[in-house]
Image (cartoon, rainbow, N blue to C red; front, side, top):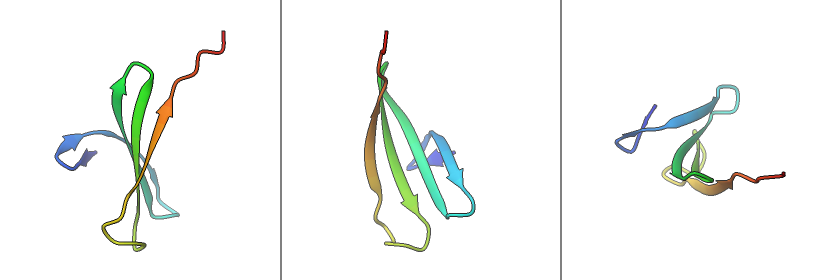
Length: 55
């Protein structure tokens, strides 16, 4: 989906009114942002996901 002017991967929770959008930072890091419909307008929750090598 397009988010803030850029095509991004997204996970949409229809029943909850939540959209999580993901952008690649580097080979092991994703930046995520969560927008909740009808709650806290204009406020987003940012988070970082890191790939872990368990070998």
